[in-house]
Image (tube, rainbow, N blue to C red; front, top):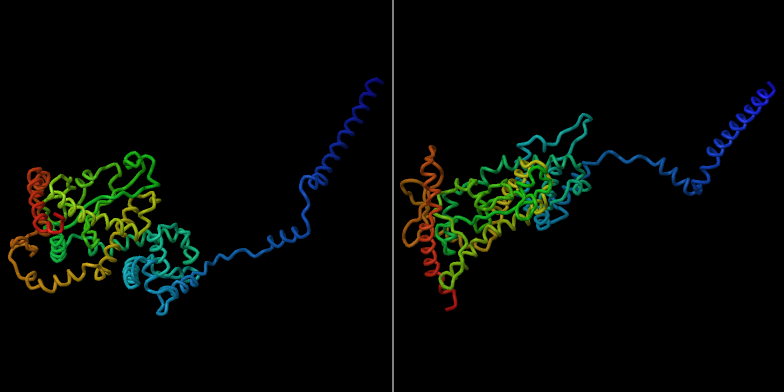
Length: 433
């Protein structure tokens, strides 16, 4: 019994010692250890931390009215800070054309109309939204870049871009992305006849737009020779850089012939043939024809170059995930490109030539002629006719016969030889014998 009693007494003493040790450890960890591991701040640092904690929170008000006033005074006031040339360079168009586009888009879409919110505060002005969109299209920048100056958020900028492109398409597509009329055909045919190519209505080619955010499941289909996903634009342009035909959205793995077979280029006036690139031979006639053809083939390349220079968003890899949005952006850029061409065509080098043509030949061109609408352009004293438009009831047999005729090598070779001879007769004096 004495042994058991002494053992119990010893155990109680050990337990109390353990509890006391744990208490000392907890007190040391709570009161002394933090001062050893974490250095003490000086009084200045403590004061700075207190100032940061007590600093007022940033304003949530973007001061949108201030952004509108500054934008108006900089570019749209009667005595604006930046002149017309600076406006043209930064907006890719003249001020009058910009205001015309903005007015039409605002009338057709409630998104651009300035309204008050539930608190009675005015929202963004149409000027701010349209300017943000044009800046993104012209410079290819993200919505955050235009936020600081225009006081417009990222989400609003993206929505404005989509609504603006759709508004431009709905308001101006029928006028600025259409088949050429009789008057247009006469002007185009006259221009190209002076260049030695009677009957030519334009140059056709394709360009690729990289699609960075193409869905992974589609990348193999949209990847071409560059191994990156792209979308193809097929276009027909004339010497004035006007784009008469645009077909966009084909996968980048397709070649030019694949795009041509699926394109809507067949809706243009009936064409006699496609003149492909001519291989140079030792003949002087063939060399002259190849040189002249290279000049006119550059029309569409120049149009692509000017289009990309005006709207840098088409030079950057596309970031949208939806193909329909990319189609709207591309079509809206082409429409505005044509509007700029119309607005500035009078400044072109050959404007005087066309002006004399219209002044001298108008009586002949406006003479009444029976039958379908035709062109009065004359080649070797014979009228060159173009049927315009499509019949209400399409004859598919005639359509397929036309496709077959376009692929007839014998007809193509015969027409090309005639054109080579025509070029030689009219331009051989420009070559060194």
